[in-house]
Image (cartoon, rainbow, N blue to C red; front, side, top):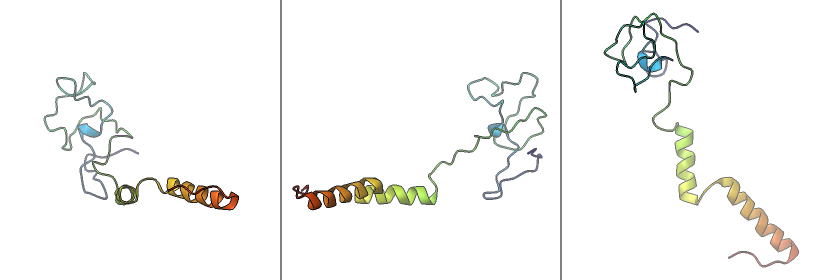
Length: 105
C-alpha cells in the first residue's frame, strides 16, 4: 500500500512517511540512509519528501506490550507462571488420586 507524505497512524496520529519507517533507514550509517542518492533528512521521525521511501513491514514495534499481553504477564507473575503449567499440575494431581499415588506437596 503506497503511503502519501500526509499519511498518519489511525490509532496514534503519528506520521508514517518518515525515515524511521523506511527500508533504507540505518542508524549505524553517518547520514542514516543506505540509499546513496537520497537527500539528507535531519528529522528522521518527521514526514519528508524522499522519493526513495519504501515502508518496512516490521517498522513499528510497540514499546510496551499490549493490554492483553501486559495483563497476562501480571497474572502469570501473581499466580506463578503459565496457566498451561497449572492445568498440567492439576491433571497430574487427579491422576495420582485415581491411581493411589501420593499427591505432590
